[in-house]
Amino acid sequence: MPAKILDGMATAKQIREEIRSEVEQYVAKTGVTPHLAVLLVGDDPASHVYVNMKKKACLNAGMLSTVIQLPADSQQQEIMDIIKGLNADPQVHGIMVQHPVPKHLDELEILATVSREKDVDGISRDSLGSLMTGEPIFISATPAGIIELIDRYEIPIQGKHAVVVGRSIILGKPVAIYLLNRHATVTVCHTRTRDLGEMTRQADILIAAVGKAEMIKGDMIKDGAVVIDAGYNKVEGRDKDVGDVDYEAGMQKASWITPVPGGVGPMTIAMLLKNTMKAANRAAGLI
Ligand code: NAP
View 1 (cartoon, rainbow, N blue to C red):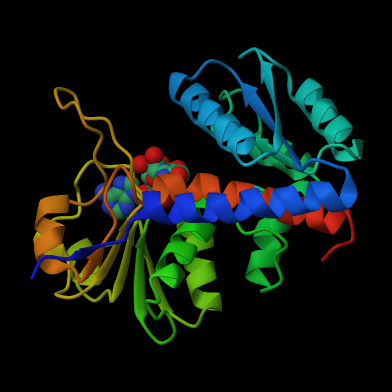
View 2 (cartoon, rainbow, N blue to C red):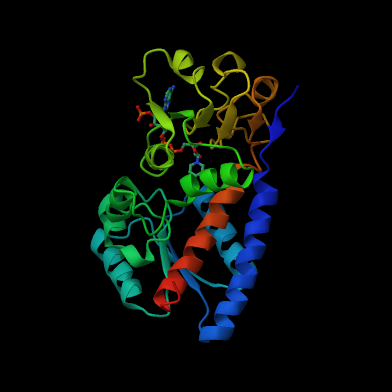
């Protein structure tokens, strides 16, 4: 039987509607509008597309969104000073720095400037550290979106063997820690993993977070696995972007699978809004 679809698009839409009504109630109660500030450094075309999508999603949810666009040759101190200003601005509830920043900048140091109370993208050292200790304020949007999607389909995590392929700080590592916090047994794979297929074939829950088009083949997936494909890859000559998993083959092996597009991507934006709403609620002392 082919796999069932974990529909990130429909789930994210539902979450955005929930947030929209929460924003309405919040504005009525406080007279303040939840506000996300996004810093975009440089002119990476994909980053511009993502930032526009985030801005549109904020506006649709009734939130404010300010995009601060800075030239590619911006200096570290200049960016950190802007973030410090946003930290101190009571009208701003969430701050995110669009990844990646130009190579001459120290991204981790920039992210470390975002205050913990406003780090709605959840990838500063502080936020990642608090995920490790099991007491995060904000969980990084993509890992949070992945777990929220699994939860909304009522797929159990506890006691399952989750295999995460990829160990970036924005995705692989935090999703692995989050799964561990949720009592999965977790294996993390990367470029030095010896027999990747042997690892992935053990996964009850397989998370692909690599950035290599269709590298997870059908014979690397256990029958009945839950397959979450966070990858998003452009392939020359193909009009549709593809994930890290060979989707057609995955459909024949998995019990559940996320499509690309329409799986993890929309969930990431929904979780960014959810985190911004949470930041606004915390700022108003409502939670
Ligand atoms: P990244 O920083 O490039 O990290 C890729 C990870 O994959 C690294 O840990 C790398 O291992 C591992 N890897 C690469 N080739 C591998 C191989 N052949 N076998 C095993 N592991 C391998 O990428 P990222 O930022 O985490 O993003 C990963 C993918 O997710 C990309 O396609 C990106 O577009 C997508 N993404 C989607 C969203 C969303 O909202 N949907 C958000 C973020 C990212 P090493 O550590 O050993 O180098």
